[in-house]
Image (cartoon, rainbow, N blue to C red; front, side, top):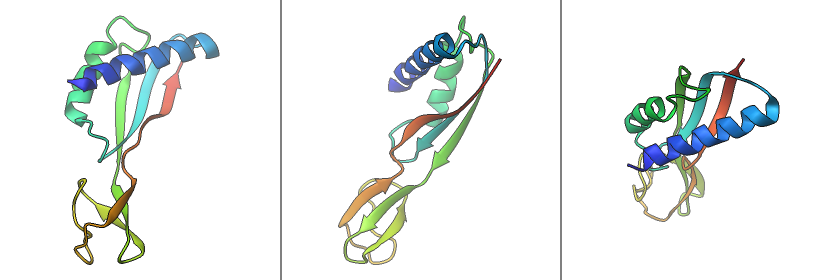
Length: 113
């Protein structure tokens, strides 16, 4: 389950930022996760609670904003939404797509005290 490793990395980032910005507690963490990132959101939610035990984010609320997958369709010459990698273009059925969005995974916002 690589989601646990992701949660441990988030904990490390929070601890580093707390030292740098001088805050003592994280009340809310908002993550932006693309649908094509390969992250299982439910596993991440479970892992987050476990990974934050004993940390400055132990009781933090986790919010996840999922972003849609997008790709550039070469035959259509436009951006189209896709639900999964290797899906065909929803307009022309072509598989000549280049992913342009939905792979991201980042901390979008923190609420601290």
